[in-house]
Image 1: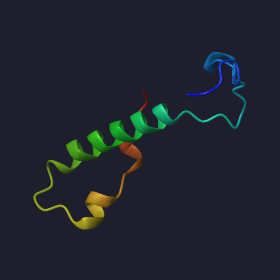
Image 2: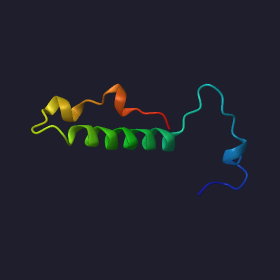
Image 3: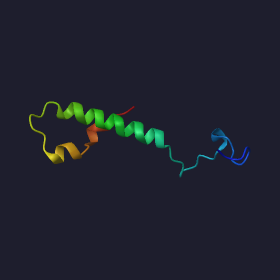
Image 4: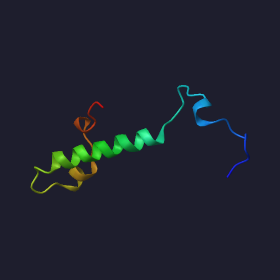
Length: 62
């Protein structure tokens, strides 16, 4: 709980080049992990490296 008026509403915060959106980052990572799982579903015995690495194709356009 903060003091009313101590911070501007979220839609009034400046969103310059350094602005970060944690929700977007989390959703992007989740989509990448889903694509990785689909890609590895055809691999009989995926290695630890297969399970640990995300490939460029796991990051598909939105």
